[in-house]
Image 1 (tube, rainbow, N blue to C red):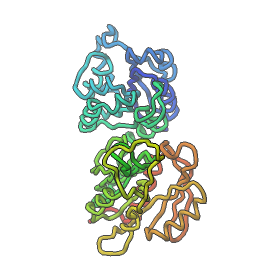
Image 2 (image 1 turned 60 degrees about the vertical axis):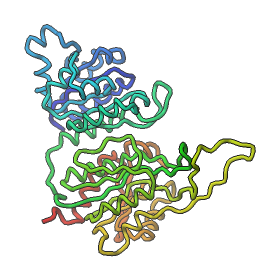
Image 3 (image 1 turned 90 degrees about the vertical axis):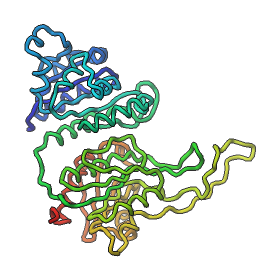
Image 4 (image 1 turned 180 degrees about the vertical axis):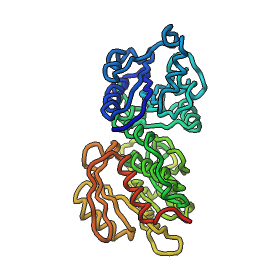
Length: 402
């Protein structure tokens, strides 16, 4: 059983119902939960529901005579080991970023010296608005950890980034934050990680891309950084926040990703998780293509450079360990073995993306293929996959550099 006390701040949004399941998971794990429910949050879940699951009183009022006689917001912020805001609305994020404090939730956030995790949830346009993105950058710079948001359908009927992460993913982030410090088994090592999709332009509006969310690659970068590695994360377009302690390089195309990887060398290890476009249009139209009487335009594709094979090629700049991913929809073992031989890398992690909740989801099921054989990992969260892989990489590199 885990130990610790979580101060759970529930903001106002449809996703507030997920806070009930998160509370259940935390209590089941043995963690104490102290709920704060905002006035807007109480429009979606009741104080009674939260109190019943948390087995503790839900606080709602900054000006409670009984609580504030003892400076309740200060006591709450100091009694917790970790503060979790789920859902973190655009309003709560803005208040925290600018130090505003006009209710119990925002005042507690301003009064705390404890780690904070936020799980954003809002309409896609609110999430992508420059003000929210500025606030996100400020919060991350202040040390706030961000979980999500996911890409998917939302209650407003729109689809895109802004959907709150599932309770299981937030729970995993909480458990990782509460975990005791690990040995810095990768201290002094430099690891290159690629993540997310690439996007190949057809015209100024349209791109060829894929469904990769970047979650697995970002989780691996975070896990390697927790082991003390210097991590360079070369990322295609995602809606994810940069993991703490990770240097991120944003790219869009496969050509840009390949160039960024070469510029990041030398590295002790490279982990190629990104879903890189195999092909790109040989011509990018300078203006938006229009429908016309002649039917759809003819598009000729040319092959992109093979980043994994390039990093695996023998030579003085080759990382000691090169790990690739094989996202497959059938014949997982055969395809993963063939890719290992074809690319010349050291390990391949095969994952069946035809399974539900893998592409863009929070779980993965891995087949680790090496020259000497393979091993199957049970289905687990992408956070757990990342931690296990980081441990394997540490063992392969022989611990911290001198």
